[in-house]
Image (tube, rainbow, N blue to C red):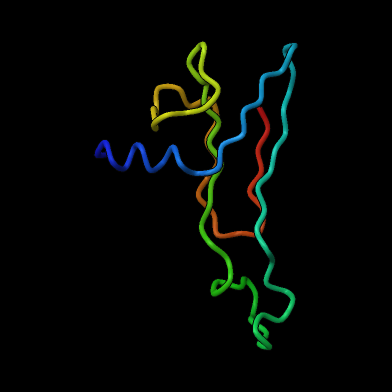
Amino acid sequence: MTQDMLERFAKNPQFYVKPSDDCEMMFAITQTGGRLPHEKKYYKYPFKELLNFGMVAVFKVPEGQDYLKAFDKSNIVFKSQVRRERENAGRL
């Protein structure tokens, strides 16, 4: 990946979570589903025309930082599959 790509990756939505104790976490990202009509048109399952590919990645953020400045695969704690589905979830 080029430096530009690494920096663009860090501009994706980020949520900083710091549990006070050791715990199990569950999370999910969702997007608008395709069951309702879109612009007065119904689409067939799996609604490829309306859903984007997405994934969830959880990173360990370096000490003293509260956001990821660039992609660093050595800090990945969890990575979901890339899916074109309404919900993408994980547990760690």
